[in-house]
Image (cartoon, rainbow, N blue to C red; front, side):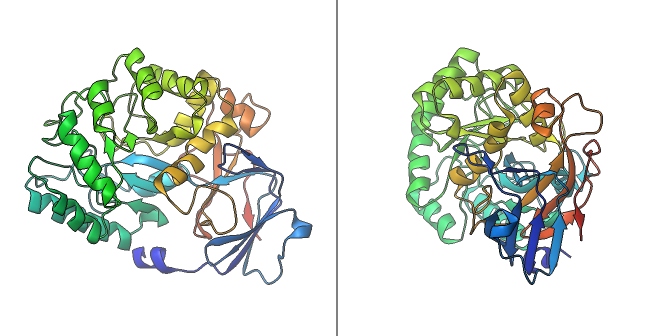
Length: 395
């Protein structure tokens, strides 16, 4: 089944009767369109039904006036092997997150592996193995971009070249290993960037044994591509320091579920005030001590929309198009050529909001009626969200 998830072809798919189409693009978050055409997992057309070639479809989905949005991207997870987390002794957490609308996950390090190797040969081997394993195995169809080594003292530029040559494209959180000084991290981050490997730095107090405080000065000196869990994972820096990071750095501002919620709101508002909302991306930072959060990204969207007072359609972009562009992924945006990864949503039954966006702005999470990855339906009505008022159907 896992192999089928990675290799099956969707054929031609038509999604019609879309009531609200969210684009994932901050510059145009809502599209004036009611139809999407897909061919073998890629979007080929977006527009009004009369303007799209819908003939010869092997699958037709009637959205029944519901909202279609790009599949959500969790920018910060800690997978191990398969759909299992030893951190919580839990099976099926990735598939369960798919029922929360997540279609892509990005590893910030396979740090919870029991006996995780910390020698240079071992950490490289683990990263390459994790990258290969999740490239071949997709729980629930979810694309897990894994193989993110935690850097340790003694690594040289050749080690980063070796990793890149083997297909590793990510670094685990800088600061979870023995490299904690800003100048050491800066050199290794630069080596990684030179060889096409994207970096994320831990921000805030320690989260696991062996990690430590990474303060604003270390974050600025290291200059990693992503300021990982800027609101702490779990313990945040002072709010003033977080706002200073937003102002003085040009890197990605990652806000996570398993962090300080007050500081999450402050960081999002700072990004809006600094006119750089394109830098904001969302993650869960799970599995972690507080567990796994199948609805974590949806909860972040509703929290930032309702409490940070940011329009819901913009916050959905934080969880989709922003991340896709920053992480150089072929998903997250509704436009021809992108992967056909979608979440079909409607307002939850009995919410006070009259529309989906209004309900999210009031703090409720939407109901999911279907999730599609690469043009293939992966689930119908979600087993985890509140029931949607209306759900799409395969005609």
